[in-house]
Length: 277
Image 1: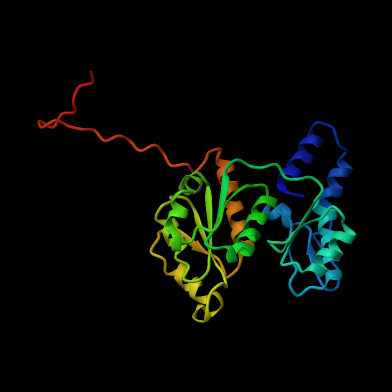
Image 2: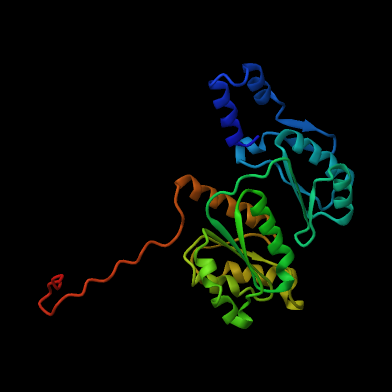
């Protein structure tokens, strides 16, 4: 149960549409379900606005299915990241309505899709090999109720590809930039866009790339102001953070579009502004 659903339940109780017992049952549910191999947090959505997310890597298909069943029963939606084909088969056998996002290595399951909040999150990828991480960020942000705009294969080796998509970036509330190799793209985007910017280094590159360490250090040492960096290949973390930022914008009831630039006042040689005609 996310905060909006809790408020709706309380409002219905206030108007006499649901009995007190139903409200008490909803809030008295145990905050943790013990499965032996996992302790499932049933109040994560009330605290953070979104239920616990399953990290599939290292878990057996049976473990992932059992955790997903508990989260779905409590919250009605489940996001599982880093799923293998075996995970996907097991989840879809138990929950036929589940959607496997193969490129993102994610699986989503929901009874009722979340309404899309205002504003756009742009996900930018330097190259095609960065797409698994970029898609993980995009699927995460979309599943959390955001509109996502994908801007892919716009690395600095062909800067004109980025510049022609600049309006798509400047009109977004948050921009996620995914890049491997030397990870120069976030610095370039940071110099062109005045929005919250999240950099995601990927483990794409040759030997001295050190599995993404070069990209990570490059982003951390960027000269572009306002660049926040998540861990190597952490598309999920970037998508989750971007959703939180966009949620704050929605609460403000505004967008992060730049304010109109005031026209300069042209003064005459005597120091007075010319009269309007």
